[in-house]
Length: 394
Image (cartoon, rainbow, N blue to C red; front, side, top):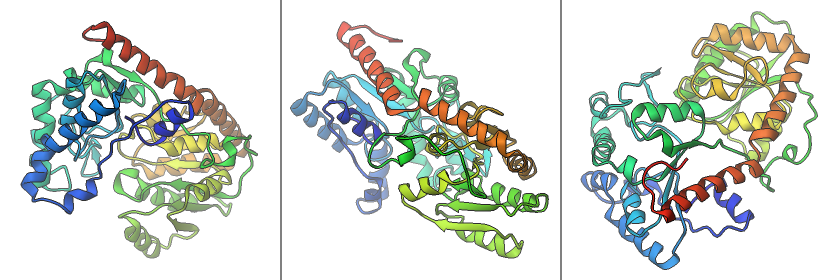
C-alpha cells in the first residue's frame, strides 16, 4: 500500500499495488473538534477499513507515507493484527515534532527530540494554536509510551543519513531505519532532459522553485539578491517560481526596497518549471529548516544545474560543496550573495558543477536505482516476518 511516485514505480515494474488514502481537507468538513482530536490519536474507522481491505486483498506488505491525521497509528495495529509487515517512510519529523518541521519562530528547534512533546502544547507549535497542538502532541506522546513506533513498524525509510541520525537520536531503533533517497520517475510526466542529456548552457537568471513560506528561506534569498545587484555588473535576474503565504510580503518588500529584476512567476506546471530550470544559471535552495529531501534538488541535478543551498541538515549532505554546488550559512543573506556572485563570475566552474550534478543524479537518483533499493527493503522485511524473527532486519 504505497502512493505517489512509488505507486507508479512499482506498477511500472509489474507489482500489484492497492492504495488507501484519506484527505485531511475532510477534517474541517466533518465532526466537531473533540472527535477529530480523538481520531488523530486512534481512528476506529481507519482500523476497521484497513482490516477489511487486508482480509479481502491479502497484500504481502503495507507501506505508509503519511498517517497524520485521519489515518492515525491505528493503521499500524490493523496491519499487524492481520499479519502484514509494515514499512513507514519518514518524510518529515512528525513522530516527535508537532509541526513536523523542527522549526519554531523562524529558528531550528529540537526541544522535543528524544523527549515527550509536551512543549509543543505550551508553544502552540501546530497551527500556532495550543488547542490544535494538543491532539498532535498527545498522539506522539501516547504512542511513544505505548511502544507503537518501535513495535508496530517493521522498517523505517529515511531519505538521508542526516534524517536517519535525527530519528535515532529521538529513540527509533537504528536497525529498523535504512536510507533510501527520493527519485525522479522516467515517465511522460518528466522533463525531456531526463531522457537525454542537458545542453549545459544557460540564460542570465537564477531560479528558486518552491512554496513561498517562511521555512523555505525565500526572504533571505530576496535580501541576498538585493545585495548581489549592488556588487555585480551583469544584468542577472531572479525568477521565483511558486506561490504561498509570503507572496504579498515579498511583493511589498520589492516595492519598498526598490528591488528590481525579480520575477514572481506564480505557480507553474511541472513541465513549465523544468523548462525554466533547464535554462537557469543555477538554483538556490535557501531553506532555514531541516529539509528531509527536496525534490527540487534532484530536478536541478537532472537538468545539469548546480545548486546553492543552506549548510543545514540534509541539504549539506545532498549538495557537495564546490562539486555539485555551493553551501552558505543558513539565514545569512550576505553569505548567500557572495556565493551567488562567485557562481556568476565563474561561469565555467558553475557549468562544471552542473555536469557533476548530472552525474550524481544518474548514479544515485534514477527510478531504476530506487526500485532496486525499495525491493531490497521489502524483501528483507518480508523475510524477517516469515522467519518469525523479532527485532532488527538489516
